[in-house]
Length: 85
Image (cartoon, rainbow, N blue to C red):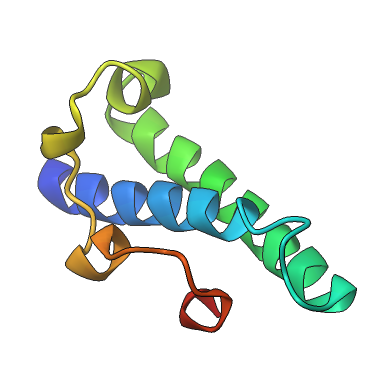
């Protein structure tokens, strides 16, 4: 069960950060504003999932990048706005 929570929380955390990093860079104001609004709750959800198994700070800030268990698609290069959408 702990592994499943790690997979879900890591996906939400990485996707939430990837969505919010487009703030101010999208082609249309409404698009990147909505993308930002979708990314923030994902990051909060990941923190709640980490709280189920321990201290979120330990899982987010004290792990090496190779210890994250996020989906492979989230590791692809994120330089295209349409790919992010």
